[in-house]
Length: 493
Image (cartoon, rainbow, N blue to C red):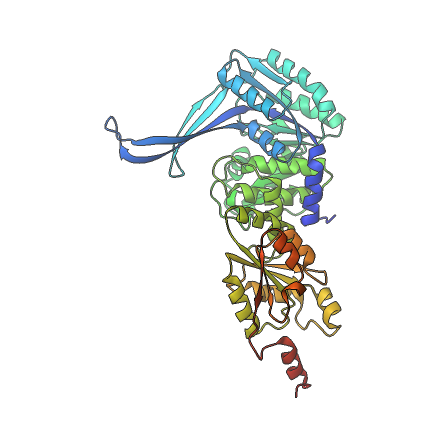
């Protein structure tokens, strides 16, 4: 396992372990209601737009979004919170039970109103938000009841999440009671904080404030790297934390640890539509990373990858295992767009085929790219909606063509191919033939040069089995890498 980053094998190992994790989530629960519609006129009653609602969506919010993130990744979840004795409280409990969440530590308090936030949107633009909630701190009797219910759950936990939305559930004494019990059993406690007083979370493993929250807690206006580092260091020391992850919306996040330089992780490879919920995803991933044996740096890398998925969606969202693998594949393969990991590409192609797209595949060494190659690839691309090129690794080329080849290393060959507009994706494979890659990617059309008979094309039988076809493409005469090599070396006649 790497100490400073993650690769696809690390991600897959992480995802294989998450289903064995027992997570305890404590915090403010709420319902997030979205009313989607269109607005085309102004109300005659007042100068406000009229939204004609066409779709409604009701989601678990607050600590419930942390639960959503955990359940998507297969973790077992215990949820502890305080709900009102009302219909919305019943709706939350019912939804949690349907999601197979342990709700034994939920407490109902008739003096409280269960939080519901209603957002009215038109054309993906939020027009208005309506809040119905209680924000007063829970009473001592309710707090004792909650902590008593939690004691047994904490004993079996691998990680504890505190999701504070400032609605009164997480009092300082409850927070300290949970942290104290967790420390006795060496269980990591990760916190999404709220308010200006972070000392109330003292002794937690890690906090994940955003930039605005960190500014409020420190009184420092964070407008550059210097003030960012100053605020991060102050929080780390004052709250007696092991680490701090300061999230910065579309700019990514920064990891602070004692006696180490801050590590900046920019969000890459995704268009940012909505940052709401990304903090919950970061919190979830870091907690699971620690619970599955990853270092803080590795957990932060994985959290950054998942957050990059979530900010590309509207509303509080989650990142599925497939989406995380896909995003990680493009990130760690060295290109955000074309050169990618085969497993990440498999996931993406599966989704594209479901949308009716036809995938064309061809392969080769492409050592010294010439006009014949370009013409061949352009014609192959015209057969479908996207072209995937399987590229022999350097080791594979040496086995096939001898130790003097390739002349151009695989990384350079991949970049050159990716620069062609007709090539959508490049995947490097290490075997002598692309049979395993074809089996993994399952293209609709397999293209090879017409110097082969169809029966001789590697993978032809597989492609035909799943309903695809093989196309034999003529080469441009007089163009070949071997001829170029001979000419350069002076051995051509």
